Length: 308
Image (tube, rainbow, N blue to C red):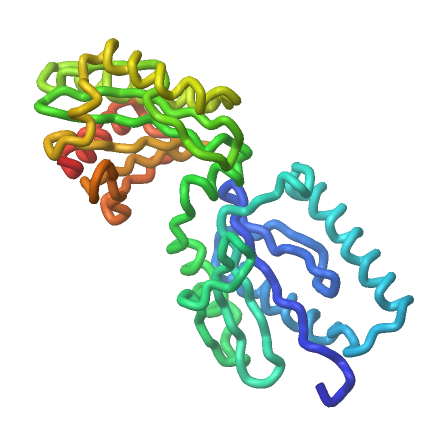
């Protein structure tokens, strides 16, 4: 730019384990936790944008300036680690919003994708004179509508990306678990514990919920030998439930995925795709925060009906 300084750094607003944070940068104010209030968020971000603009780095930095910037970043990380209560390498927010002031006429607000790139489809262009409360409303809306994946939530909470599977066929539900050999790796189905539930009985709802919870508890355990055990698990699943493997991918068989990350449980119906594949139905997914047995059972029952 004309004054010999570069572009200002963006300001980040993160959602981590349900909490909101203004994330420090080298030139930004100290980290702080934000109230889930658009006005508070907007004022904090607006102030951070002003600081970022006034502290733009020079286009050409001297060695001592680079060292000072590195020291500033290290200090900011240390302060932030104390604030969030976890080591910085464990900090993996489920949602991140990037707010950048171009210094002329525009503030850009956009979500950040898993790979660190800007999600252009989420980008909102606002005038620099925008009221901070309105800015906060846009940031809040992007966070609220983000719908982080089960994997993003698992990484945020430090949990394996496991799940329970509920197959249903001709009025009978069959429950099994899944396993990971490593966090973030492939998922292997048909793992124990198993359950066979007659959906026409009085206690089917309760049995669905308790069986799914037992499977979720089992899926929290990393099994380095999961790949080798999958064939045996498949045979055990058939023997335990009576659901023949050739019928698992039958048009009459539905599949519901149940995933848990932190306090949230997501119940996700699917539909049959091509070949031996099931495809998700994200519009019909239900997210529950610490549900009761009855609430979870109802959600699984509804998902079974959607999946058939």
